[in-house]
Amino acid sequence: MSDLPEYICHRARGPIVIDGLLNEEAWEHAPAVALREDGAGGQPRQATTMRALWDDEYLYVAFYCEDRDIWGITTERDQPIYEQEVVEVFLDADRDGIGYVEIEVSPLNAVLDLFMLLRDDRRQGLWDWDSDGLRTAVVVDGDPHHRCTDDRSWTVEMAIPLTDLFTAPHIPPQVGDVWHANFYRIDRAEDGDEFSAWSPTFRRNYHTPSRFGRLVFQE
Image (tube, rainbow, N blue to C red; front, side):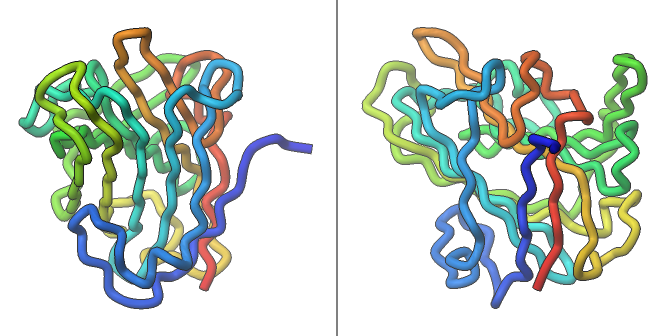
């Protein structure tokens, strides 16, 4: 039996304002799942939860990251923010394991969005691709501009336009549609970096479509 996880993504029961607060009633009906340490699948030092919803226009994804030392530098779009602290969403809408969308958001609300191509471990990111209607917001409980401050957490909320998921079998999804997906976090701490995943890759390489879980669209 496969150990790959499955997330039941419910249709949002009302409007969602992308402000990083997650205080809409709709989010109360989105199950929160914990990310695991990517290398061995155990409990990470700093906990992260993810939840998701959808409607006819957007896939909504939210992360809550416990963080004792929140850190970021870059504010511009399409920079290598994976070298800093980020959360990441990988979406393989047609489940071919070859082409998938990658979206990263940092504590400073910097965004990196790519369309990735992968075959036989040969990887190419299409950096010119943008999710033009992507909306993101971050709320930080702490100071992300300085290291070793008294930090507590950061929350990310994003609305990913379904029309940018060109390989999806249906736009918007039909109830029962299944995409492959994974959700990640990179934490850069003074005592060592930590890599977390919803579906751990067990090889410290997020670009492992064979380890993507199932994102199932339901009412």
